[in-house]
Image (cartoon, rainbow, N blue to C red; front, side, top):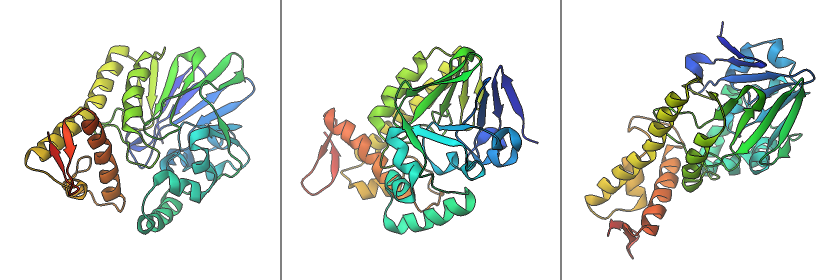
Length: 298
């Protein structure tokens, strides 16, 4: 039986290994009038009526592991930030969201359907930054748009409880992920500053860390998580210190994933993330683009 942590009207159902991918942690919020689920990870399939009877699903962002329980709640309203809305409504929208080559998207579709029970939700509707849901009995949820992981990534705050569901600002040892077509390294950097300023006393992640109730601990973990970006930049500069290289050469050496990690999307993700770092370094004058397509230290 999965563990459940309770904070007033909020129940946090912990996924396997504290929600380690491919699972996640399920947040349910019960107001006097409305029950809301934040995202729908794989653990949602093991909860039963407490999840299956929700009135509303608010998605903090759209990725396959956050849609894995939607098939269980076909009558619930589904809302997602407007920047991620197309990805929730159709496979074509999700495919554009990922931005992977056609050769990768075919196997990816098969994978998300088989392993994550993927079903599009053409009935999903959009919300904007600052959207507020009154659930009855003084229970209020507010969305804070904090993009980078995806264009529409939001923190969902249960204001009366001071609980922030920070989604895939997951404080993992892997670090921030910004490898999809709608991801942004620059936005993620700003988000990592903004999330620290939220008026919260409980922080819930989609994965790994699950629940943190001490602010100093949260800030320390957030700093370590953010530091992964600078570690990647340092590794990239070390690669270029060996000599000028093309983007594909750098991607083959891996910046995010270990060499043994084998998944069809890895090469595309590595190229995209490294390109974002190179753009920053080019703008800062630390790297130059050579006429032959290679990049070199200045």
